[in-house]
Length: 115
Image 1 (tube, rainbow, N blue to C red):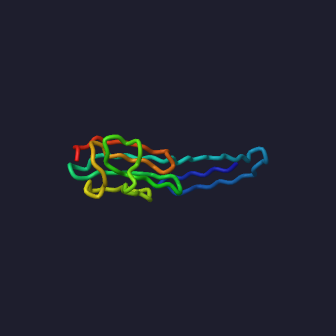
Image 2 (image 1 turned 45 degrees about the horizontal axis):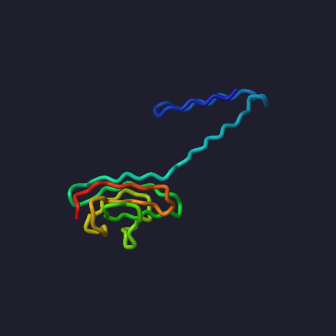
Image 3 (image 1 turned 135 degrees about the vertical axis):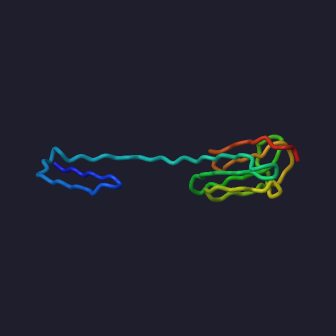
């Protein structure tokens, strides 16, 4: 039998005795990390974006009254990270900050003061 004890402040103790073949087992752990985005206001003149993108995906951020089609000149987000983005850097006019990913897995709209 194999025993392993471990705690942050405790010394590991390993006790080994003969192990029968029937005592051997395998466990598989599958972790799936999905794309996610949180778009929020960071005051009257900025947006806060926390985003986790899928591999090879990008996100676009723009201002519009409807968020159906990304603006051609949209602000591009190409890396998963936390951002504070000045509204002056985000192109467009309207009452919503719009976010969409190139793989269509993320889409959000945040009401803002019209500009």
